[in-house]
Length: 279
Image (cartoon, rainbow, N blue to C red; front, top):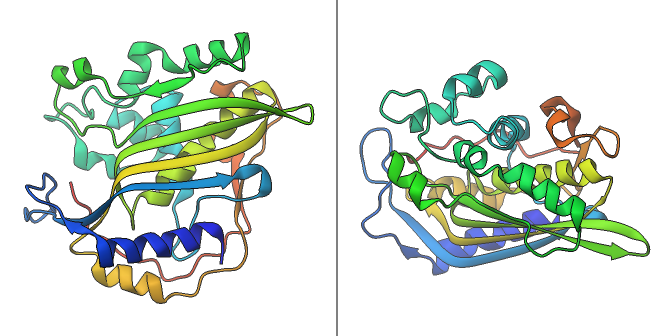
């Protein structure tokens, strides 16, 4: 069993056995019913990418290509346009979060990245001094939240640090999430931000270091308990999947494409499970 699968099963058990019930829950299912959940607080995991550890489960297929396209929409295109997401990447699931028939998700995610020129600033800081301790992406923008409605960012903060080991530079990354759907989004979000880490590392010709993942509220919705128990019963693959970025060192961050990523040795358990998303 891979490290990611072991952590996945441990977290499912913790939530089902020790989790507490949400109160005054905001999310709704598509039928209008309140989406309650059981949750734990303060989940942390560490993966050493340089040693081949990746935060992706084999207990169910993870749609990594659409996840990476979403990431590019946010950090390359720096857009909140649903039309762009559909037309350029053929990704449609964000339509459920359209704001007031604007064909946008409001002043969120890519709009905040663009507003503050976050990526350009991060790349400039790392170029000028790789060892600075101020490489922080924050999507938590109260001013932007007041400008429009929209889903508040779940994966809202990312931090980057550089280490020199035996003469080589390694890029580490930390992802902080306020809230995470354990069964649906956990490994999608983790692998998205590993992809972002890879893009920045390739931009400078550095090696991948460690990936740290902290979730404040990790939950399972009340219509997912059957799927949770099925995942616990599944036998995980022994083979560790790897995400690779097939571009040359020092490829510009903005030149990386979704098809440049390749998931190797990934053999997840099937069939895929179905989930009714909470909106």
